[in-house]
Length: 198
Image (cartoon, rainbow, N blue to C red; front, top):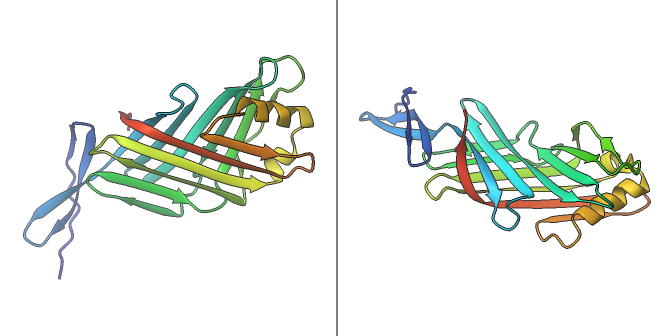
């Protein structure tokens, strides 16, 4: 029978923030990660960032993609695991996933053309977000795949056009929408990870 004991001991070494975890019989302590990481997309370092965290009993994966829409519109799309359905972590990895009802938010500002909008972070039925970080390699990734009619269905045709323009030709952000309010969004953020504040 395995004996499990939670041993509190925190250290920071070469990008690892560790907290002592389950001790097997014989007193061997296996540390686990206890940290938040920011990940910068290797393809779009200035416009695509994401986050993975496993701090104490709280887990999260989220991200933000930005672009320039029609005119001078500044477009932001933010996604998040509001309530993760699957989480795991070890001494080197953290994984977080929400298979549905992840949250999505859209912000458009700046053009003066009447396109400004700041939606609330809405849970979307067909929206999944998953993320992971490998602290031994200091790399990570977060991806989002969402579709439906609610959040983008409330936007005007000009606002949808601005979002399409913001990510046109972007290989890591794909947005498809039409006049009926149906849409789909896919975001992939992967690259170098750095330790953030706990």
